Length: 285
Image (cartoon, rainbow, N blue to C red):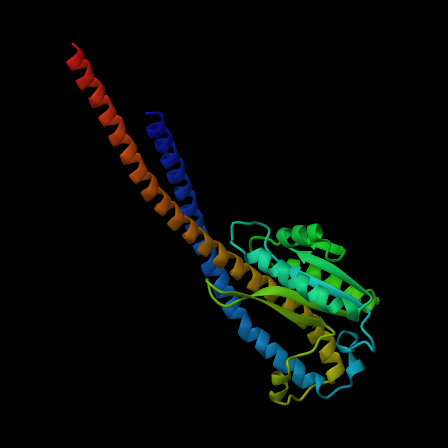
């Protein structure tokens, strides 16, 4: 009888967990839909901005703007790692943190110092615990990516590059592919370099001159690169959480089926034992 009641309590507990995982899956699905629409809408703008920047920069010297001027030697490296604030999304945050750690280990012999800027609590906590490199600044990744956060991060990274605290800045984030696939990737942010494929865009007539246009385009491109990384990170997080909750719900269903079978066996054994006691008592009388 004790075993019978114990299994019954376990089944009730698993059913409660199943309700929670189903609710979290529905919430993540709604957030994922919005995040997916946001990143799909942002990618064409990013592509066009790269084309315009490449076309304008192709007609000027490399020292036309401080943020596109490469350093002769890279001694100080800033690594910006984007993760989520919350867990329950499978190996999403762990994969990004491990990717960033491998990248830092690979670049360490080439530079004198490496600093980490963590956007998202999970990545900051993991990299701090692993002591990969000193963490210069930490931000919490909001539930919905905002341009204000991108502006704050861009301001810090730009200030560090212009003052010589960093000679190169790279972004490490999870590139969104689908709800089932998130691919850790890396992008050089500073010095800003548009993709080579973007240089084949149209030639623009610029007034008054390209240098003044670069003064507007370059800071905007830096900020938008960070904003896009936030969007990619957000879509990947919700997709990974939705998939993880779907897997958890399937696992609880299997557990309930298994425990129900064990429960029925225990109940049958308890009934059989009671019948045996009744028959034995009747025979004794």
